[in-house]
Image 1 (tube, one colour):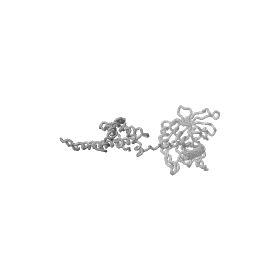
Image 2 (tube, rainbow, N blue to C red):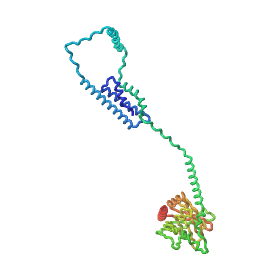
Image 3 (cartoon, rainbow, N blue to C red):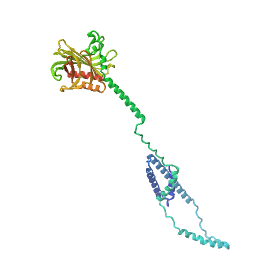
Image 4 (cartoon, rainbow, N blue to C red):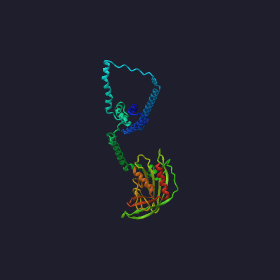
Length: 419
């Protein structure tokens, strides 16, 4: 902080007349000069620092005014206390005796020199009177280097830090490469495993000598809906038959429908246990009856809880030809398709059909992004088409409508799967 008292004192001392008005003019110019100088510094000075410097200047002004007031009061008292000169008496003082001899000659010689000095000083040019502003400016110029040499007014502002480089470091690039490699390996393994039909074939039970044994065990629980010892609990709803049809083509013209059989389908929501140690889950069961063709079949949609099976959900399909049927057994099925009632073709539910035993099949639905698409199709579209092929080679399609009751069954089951 600068020594404002010395600056102000020098400026006031340089004034030709130290009147109160002249001093106030110097003070006002000092205030403006200080504020303008501080505000012109780069980087800018904080307002708090400017206020502190201004307070220091005001304190210096106050101090100087107090000292000037004391000096003026002291001078007034000195003049008042000075003794009065004695009054002259009537007797004139006697004049000193005139010098004689050498003293007289010395006095006569020095008198012309003393008389010439006032004349010489009068002839020399006198300096012009200085204004208060010139005195303040000269004082600032004389004292500024000394003040700057004693103490800086404000420390230099710290330089801003250089911006961080936007280029990734070698460690970041290496880490990103490792992560990308892991993702690629995991994705490749998932794709390889999800497309392996042999994983779905793990559900095929071991064949026994008896025909009934092939329909028992785990397959009987999943496809036939049989209840083994301590069998699963099922909660059935009121069955409401919905419209269904069986379209059968001829061997000579597979793309042309040869005959249409009327049928019906009943959708139910069931709770099925997954086995020992597995929770009970909801399932969609559809029972289709084709009376004219003497054929029945059942479908069971459920969420997969078997970790050995690479599928998100499974669809168990079982055909039951009745005695006297002319269609025979079913040897193959295709992927289920979902469509609107007014559409001629639909969108496939992505999955892998696998034959289990004669007339019994399993479809494993894909995981990942395809799982979300499959669930959305099952929820939103109202007609299911199941392509099949009979043992004699004739192609056929079973069309099944959900209806109002079926829409509720599918919605409830899908909601429970998402929990």
